[in-house]
Length: 509
Image (cartoon, rainbow, N blue to C red; front, side, top):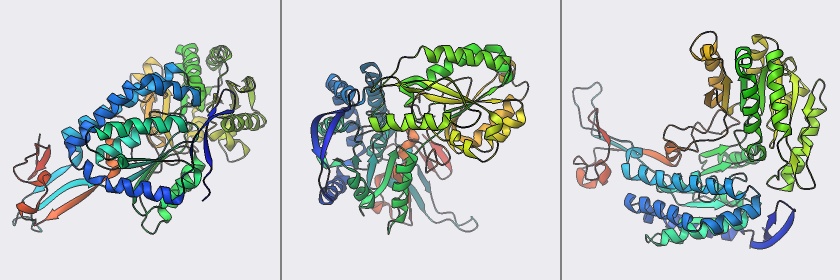
């Protein structure tokens, strides 16, 4: 594996800014993984883990100005957006620190022997333990929240798993800076630098997923890249869990009654959601089912006005820009597809937002128009105009798995009158998050959050956002008939750690 230089690139000009590092060799990947493996014991103490996570948040906040400047130089996402994303990242780290301290994620269950049961129950004590080294593949579009210190890393460290991050080539300088900040926080608590490894390069990413000491992986990116890594993870002599977020169309259904009640507001809301961050959100609404009626026309007029007023923006890199332009052109050339506002090149380095329309009937059967059922990364969406509920159901039946699915209902439908409840039930199998009268962009970091969905949205049933993301990096183990003196403190009868648990069938808090 040849070591090539890694450059920081300005997406506003396409020019190289500075050499950041070199691509990691197979030997360097091996060293990073082994250093991470050796750091496991330093994370064994939950008190240390929680303090480390909080210190990581503190150190990131202290370095905010420098980090935001570096992130903007490599992503062009803007200081306002990036400052908010960094704040979200720090909040997430602190939230996982609280989860670690509470201890419910260990899922402690103790059953004393019961000879009267059929069959008899021996002494059984169950809890969850960390898997080991986790490989994290950074996302391009969230340089903080889904990158070196993002949700995969935070949840893995909270679980007690050291991490090796494969940096995204769109923000290598920022990745190096964040890694140094996290290691500085680790040093404050006697945790070795190896607890967070960082490697660069495509080949390094392959070496990482194949390494025998890597126990699990988290990925956020494209269907093509994620599927290739997923296949590598399952083809290993010892397959490992691969939690990948790959791609999502995020369908939206607007009922006739909703369009009649507030079509202009829905059109304006859709414009804001589909162009947010220059359309580079994984939950961008990419397909909208809207009625082919006067009410639907009003929605489209509002959407047209709002999108036409949206300024051109810079995508994360020129490869994405080229892919976006080619994707829009290919879709616009399909029969019966129209472009009320044409998405395309806004300048030499920017893109302009737009949307396409197509009769929904074109999407009810297999054919060339299936391209419209695939994600197009950037500020564009497809409006499928339906004439009746049969067309809606036919289109929904052909959709792949998604992160989100949204329905806009009228006031009466939302109150349970009409088919509102039935439509929510029909959308539920399609996605991990179902929204009513809202927009999918914006994923709250909260205990009840689920950011995942059926394939190809994700490769597992887990979430990458919210407290339960920690479950991806744990496995249960049961001790049977073990003397009290041999048990870990989490499973002792007197509960020296004060953990929530289920003890002889009763929930103790």
